[in-house]
Image 1 (cartoon, rainbow over the protein chains, first blue to last red):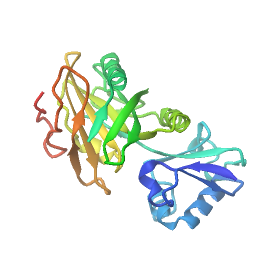
Image 2 (image 1 turned 90 degrees about the horizontal axis):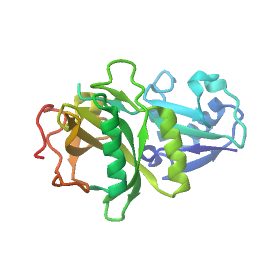
Image 3 (image 1 turned 135 degrees about the vertical axis):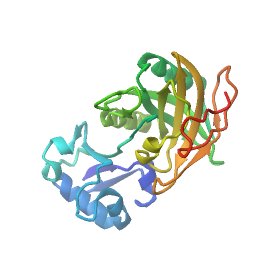
Length: 92
Length: 161
């Protein structure tokens, strides 16, 4: 099973776990299973239309899945999926 | 309250100096103690990937966040928050900062004027990023410890350095 790393603000929606082992052969399957197991996570990761929120990045190991094959990106049990908050700002 | 240890503080300042007159950005690593006090033991400088004028905007490279996350796991510490600089501006939490932040994390803003640190303040956003609150900030510097100034509603009001 692939390992999914949960950022601190979302751990409260994932049983207060830092990481979760999730079965699945693609990024989409893993995230679907994850948000089925932890339903409260879903609204924080996906829009009502089912798209990954713009301020959420998902990395498969070192790669942004948006630049791979998105939900269809193959994932192996040895892979690590990181949910990465998008952080930006500025004085203006 | 968030307290920044000396080595981390120096990394933050060096990053702000190097990036000036552009905004710098980075990640704060450390531990949250049982009493809620956050202790930043190391700072992780990140690339500013904002595509445009970086003198007043930043975007943390998420690849750096992935690396910082791996480091935090190997050192059994947490990502406590983020820092960035406001070149030739005060250390406030702007509406842009608030809109692009996440709850829970501490956000340390460094004011850097004419290439010199002029103040710092910390803020946390609420759950829906509609509001931020000042967080007490302690850092090792000749500057006095600052209680953060007004939040995003009052950009331009300087903390009492």
